[in-house]
View: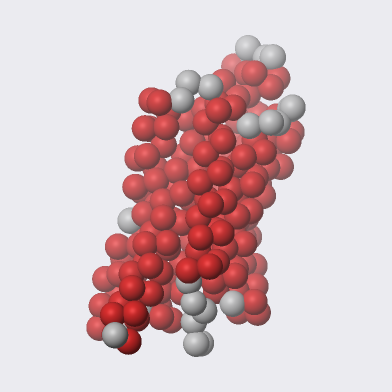
Length: 194
């Protein structure tokens, strides 16, 4: 009975970590796919140079957020626990993504993407740490490797969203998915003993 319960907890942990990485990949790529219509709609510009400059701000600050977020949220997870930090990261990038749907200007999109990048950076650091600390040593490396595949699966999934959702404002409502995942994970996962 105890070994079955531990097995269920381990697999729940793995699935949630994988889905967190998948959501991170999905939302990371979603802006790239919808970037031209987002910038054009929010600026009213058709000047290619202006659109390119604004697009560069949106994308580069998002990537910069990854590095900073991974660094700081790694430390935060040492203080408040991996599960809480993971839930916080996933919830925040869900909220920031959701808010993009309601952005009145490209400046808001830049700030929201920066904040999303900070949160995604945390996910990319916390999920392997959590798996490393909880998963049995025998298959740990394999599971962490499989977990990292979640990000490219999310990238692939963004194409499916694009195929199914025409409006960029509707597409960014996908932020509800990581929000639900954060709440679910907070109640299901147990903290690492480390």
